Amino acid sequence: MKGFIVPVLNILLIFVLDSNYVFSENQLPDNESELVFSSILFRHGDRTPEKPYAKDPYGNTSLWPVGWGMLTNKGKAQHYKLGQWLRKRYDNLIPDHKYSHELIYIQSTDVDRTLMSALSNLAGMFYPTQKEMWSDLKWQPIPVHTVPQHLDKVLSMNCPCPKYEEEYEAFKRSAIISTYNEKHKELYRYLTEHSGDPIHGPVHTEYLYSNLFIETINNFTLPNWTESVFPNKMYSVAAFSFAMPTMTRTLKRLKGGPLLKEIITHMKQKRAGTLSPNRNLWVYSAHDTTVANFLNTIGVFEVHAPPFAATVLVELRKSKTNDYFVSVFYKNTTGEPTLLTIPGCNAACPLDKFASLLSDVIPVDWDSECHAHQLFDLTSDQPYNSLAIFAMVTSTLLVFLLLAMTSLYWHKQKPTVHLYKKLNMETL
Image (cartoon, rainbow, N blue to C red; front, side, top):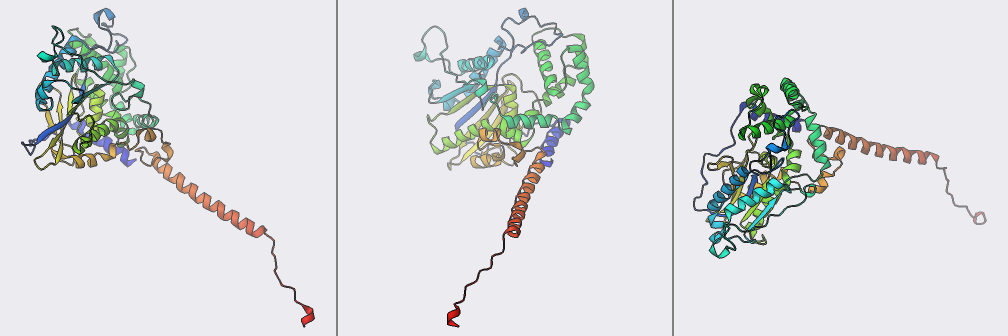
């Protein structure tokens, strides 16, 4: 139980104190180091509400002509500008600013708004040179790869994982969350009454908060009942929902671990010269939850709601002595990104140390771990670890006791046999 509570208390402490990111005030130690590879993870751009709440005065589809949960023109522009910024930042990784499948790979969740965000981003990153122009459009088609959501183990993480679901449900039933929800029960009651939707916790609060936020930035006047709770009272609870899916070590390992593992694998292959094709950039187009899960998994998440187009950069640099270092940046505004420091390391963290520090949240075999029988899973953060140990020890003792009793029983039942040799009387 201790292993379950400690990380939760740490997150809550950060939340209560409203602390900042684990920012590094130091610049990268070697200004002459060479940037050789970068993994880019971003949230999609501005979108419409995923669905209206029950009493939503703006729930008519005519008010949202592109449809529910779709990328808006503003969202397209956000990513086009982000693509231009990435083009400038990674100038040395994109020779002559030309697209090549051997230089960059783009992966997206199988959702319209993330696919469209990726395409908008690439339009800004790789607008065609004169030789690449094929029409009057300053645009060229660039492939974006995806897999169905129910098979996605890396970005959308909707691939079934029974162990994760059990761990997460157990966490939501924990004393920590019960206490948290008790503290905010009046807010939930108020939101339920006025929105018409059942609001029972941070996740429900976040869905409603997101709708109200989107309506606000689209110049809709919110109902009067929102004035006492939006944005401030709702935001802190909504933001907390982004920490919940990766609150414990096991949740981190199964939710954020696969993406972290892939990123580290690519960096090690780049160092070894075995990355094939030998790409310089790997782009992931995903969601606010993906960004939050990744940041929390590597230990640098401040409890907040990642904004539209929020971007994480995991950069690999080579020093003059051929040592490789990892630096993580977070860009959640239109300004320059902030350099983050992984707990236990420097702003420029040696690649092997980076991997070692995070090894505990990287699954060895995600499929096997997801389908492991939890009662006998000693890596679990949940309190049934003690039950598993007790059950195994008790079972072992019972087996030995049964074997001993069986042996004793057969020993008693076996007839006594006296062996003797008949004497030859004629020789006496």
